[in-house]
Length: 338
Image (cartoon, rainbow, N blue to C red; front, top):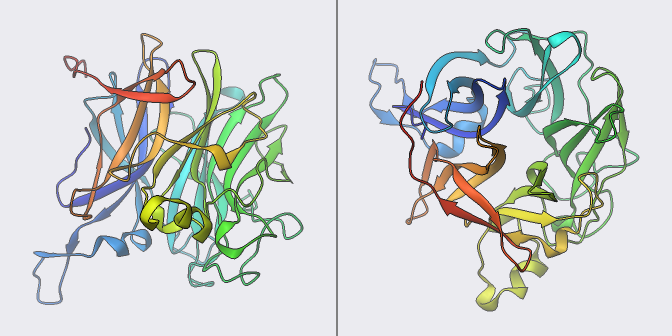
């Protein structure tokens, strides 16, 4: 696991060189530095979202991690990301340049409008924010904008970028909300397309509203043992009222969800998503190890008392059941190789 003293860590994304795994993760200090110099007052974890920097660590086995210097913080000057930098993804593009797409929010809008920016690197350690890249915003013709419902923010975050399966361009999946439907039931898989990773066309969502979720966070698609699957995360507090009432006793759990599908390009039947973890784990990712086994990784979210934990959990083995459900199995820790 990756657990930092006095620091919460949560959402993360991974770049694999074929030799070393690089993990990038959101982090924030637990410690409040008071005016009298004390630093022993633990902060409320709910405030971490506007105190983020992006951390970095490396591993050869996905279990033991060596922490590196942080790679990104909010911009010093007025910008779309001058309040906070949030979840993203990394791909290797042309000329061996690595592209990191990430979420940003600004002071100007009180952090209520989310956009997607770009940083690039030639070594995965030092990253340059691309000021020549116009931040991507939700298209008002296709997606909900701030103030068009009772929802508290303009949802346009967690970019997941991957190459087109036919070899023509790149796709970006985005946590987004539809323009129509009941206010608490508009969560959709947003979609954008690019031929060169620099110029993006915002396209219609790849799922329909009315699936029972206000948000579909941290989406990812993979082909696991020959079967395409979409992952997303959603906690019970962001279920629609209809989904909550459909659960016996009005309860139910959120966590990480899987959607088996015919193609990694959708469309996706979110209504029939399968819960694969409860809310003790969140922001799940799928990654192949050096033995070509598919593993599931997530951060430790809530403990048994509902308190936020905030560290990266160890990987779990991913398998398909005969009934078509994705399941997770605990793994023994290997000897460290880093």
